[in-house]
Length: 533
Image (cartoon, rainbow, N blue to C red):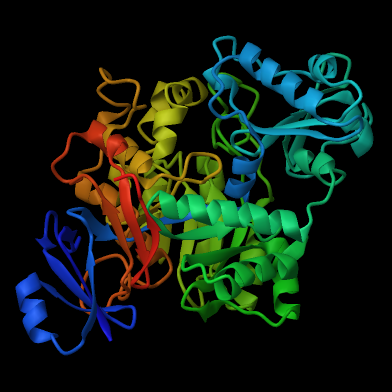
């Protein structure tokens, strides 16, 4: 009738370093924590299974508060350029990929980041034509807010010199007004709309790959935004339901629904809330701006390295207000992507005008948060979704974008926590690798793992180990209103555990990256076990 988990150090995360040696679970919920001897004596007649965590260190299940699960699966299945460190290497990989495709097939890649290249090169359509002249080529930037395409892809999308910039997007042009092949935000959709549509089998395969990988990285659940890109709401939610309800995967999923799919969700008979112990419909997702890397994050002052550019507002202030009101009409909270401070100000204005009816709103990323906006955030029932790993990958070029004067308001995670704001931790996979340990390392050290001698970017914003762990446990639970059921190890809480080889409270920060996942346990069930340890 119940399971006794033992032979490990179980960190409750109620307080730093608070631990017990055993946990008794019944019907997927923790009944009591304590010593093995105490629990054996008290529940002797109820214990039907005794599980050994092999001397590991056990934490409440790690949950990614913001990622794109199907997109992560796609990255596992496609040409991944995210680790490429030179434009020459990127060119070689694209040539190889193009040569593997049949004539006329699309060459698709993702994850390139010019900031990782010494020459900071962004390929033009003419250069991409040299790589692939008889196949359309599409390569998404790491932020997924920009892409480069060749001439054939532009032609297929009907993009010419006379094509106007779409609302919320930019078609970069040369001195003669011709498209260069570099597209930003909504302009990317002009090409994506003519790319081969994905079928249900492909989406199912991508999601299966994603969940298996996430479980192997110690992740017991994720808050994911996928519902507007894979043939609409009904087909995508069917894939999620099949995976969890029919195929038997135990993985906690909270679905963010893109604002363009809300009517489809309602007409399909769904509404916000719990669908099962493993699947929830959460907030309505809205994009307010783009990303700093591609200079499409919407700033109140121009970019330091592009003085005529303030970034891209995906919606006017009035349009954003209307979208938040739309969510309230359906009694939904909102989740708004805000990277620049101008986008954040628009979002705060809208949330003040239309407070949530049910649930909690969330703001995602907040990479530039000037002090006057933090003061207003404190008066809102809002959760901040942070991606600590961005510190490791976006610095030092962030300083080029923002300049020294704005730098103290950038990636200011410690400041937000110290102000009493509720924060959750995610990866934004496939933008970054989904490993929570990478995110925690970045939150604690404020640098890339390779920069061992670096004191950390804005070191006063470093988080403690306990704060970093809370982002991916109790912080993620709070984001979905489940802080009384998930995020710590305590009586009545779900039996979701992440078992590691290292004590994250005492090991060297660099050993976070050497720690192996021994087990991932969801609902009292081992969903991943490392057979090599």
